[in-house]
Image (cartoon, rainbow, N blue to C red; front, side, top):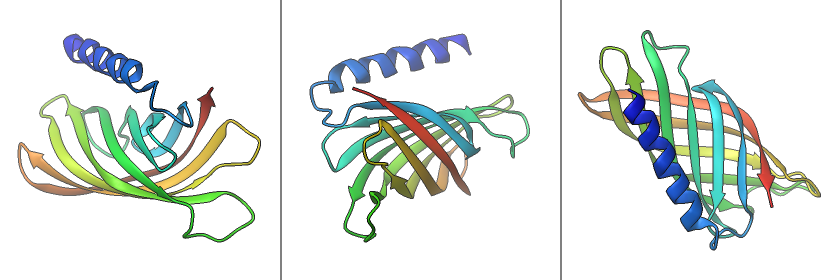
Amino acid sequence: MKKTHILLVIVSLFIISNLNHAQQKGFGLGVVLGEPTGISAKFWLTSGTALDFGLGYSFTSSNSLFDFYADYVFHNSDMIHSEENFVVYYGPGARLKIKESTSRLGVRGVIGILWLPRGTNFDVFVEIAPILDIIPATKFDFSGGIGGRYFFN
C-alpha cells in the first residue's frame, strides 16, 4: 500500500512541474465535503479547461480506504447570467476506489457549478458525478460534493 502512495505523490509532482507553463489561472488546493470527503486540487490549463483532482475517504462504503479521481473539465461562463462569476463545468474522468478487500477502477463524468468571487484567490463549487466501475466488475455509482479551493499565484 505504501508503494501506491509514493507512486501517487511522484505522478502528482510530475504533473505539477509539467503544467506550470500552461496554467493561466494557477493551481488551487482545498477541501471537498461529500462522497468522497477529502482534498481537492485544480490545475488550470487554459482559461476554459482544467485538470481537477480529488483524494478522499468514502464514508458510505464499508472497508473503504480512499477514493482518487481525476477529471478533464471544460468551463462555460455563458450558461448562468448573473452579476456574480458563476461557471458551469463538465467533463470526463476516472475514479480509483481502494478498499481493504478489493479495489475498483471506473470512468466518470462530472458536472458542476463553480463560483469565482471577484477579487479573491478562492473558488467554491458543487458537483455531481455518475461513475461506471469497470474493474473488477461493472457497477454503477454516484459521487458528488461541495467544496472550496485557494489558488496560489
